[in-house]
Image 1: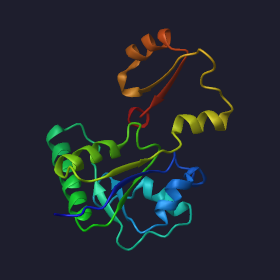
Image 2: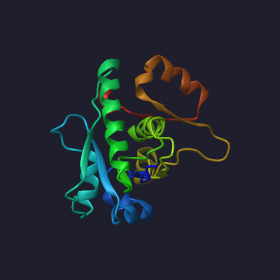
Image 3: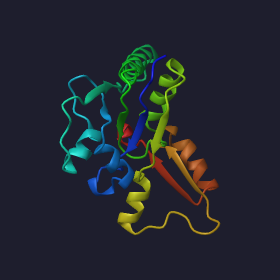
Image 4: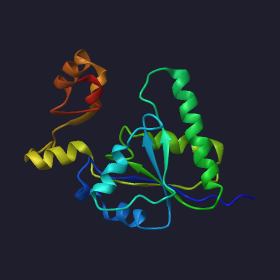
Length: 185
């Protein structure tokens, strides 16, 4: 029976290398092989740039996984299948893998889907998600804004929901944090 390594999603925060958590920092200094997302094979990776700006050298065996920014379901399915298959192949070597995630791995992140597909291919793979500083929390802290107090309501939504939905949500919540705004600008 194959002894798989563990798949670790290392949340790196919104871009400031000083916001990498101690847990993610420890994993980055460990023996796990690094995986990082790119939009195209030859592209740079924002997640990888966070750790290099923190002063870490990219290990020689670090590997990019392609996650195209498209809404084409066939293209997405092929890319996700290839990334998950490669991840399982590497995990089958018995070594842990750390997947670099900008922001927090549990919020609108590539890692959740990758981990789910990997587990579909190899049920015995253990997955660890390292929490990170989210962009909305970092922005609020940097600007001195409190997002919610006491009994106030707070919603986090992707901006792609559209103006009509956002206007309705403004009537229902005291505070809205819009994520995934860049593709709409």
